[in-house]
Image 1 (cartoon, rainbow, N blue to C red):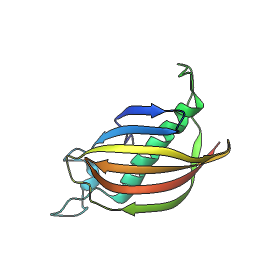
Image 2 (tube, rainbow, N blue to C red):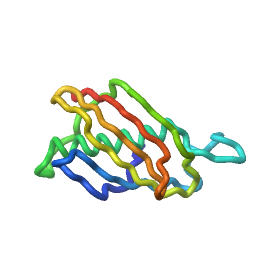
Image 3 (cartoon, rainbow, N blue to C red):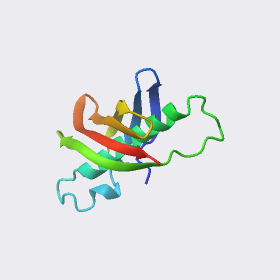
Image 4 (cartoon, one colour):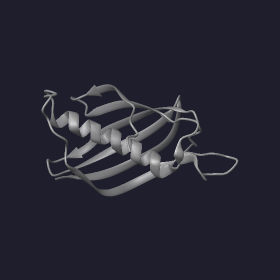
Length: 131
């Protein structure tokens, strides 16, 4: 499942990326979560921040944007931290931010944030292994 709609900004020097995601009013993530008061699940917010982090990792690994560059093989190692600060509602247009905290060629740690307008909805810190 793809949870990043578009990449808006990429800064290779700073190791940062900004992306967009529109959560449709009838997104399947809202099914049963919660009846009468739909809230986008936190696990999907972490997943979208993680996907933005993977986009960042791919762009950093392929600075020339070669058309024949293949996928970046990566596996999630650990979710160090996640906080859910404000609910994501149906129809929300979200800004996803990802930044590299550490990277040594074998593993990487990134921070992700999910914003709805000027409201920080969730944050996470995750570690990945580059296969």
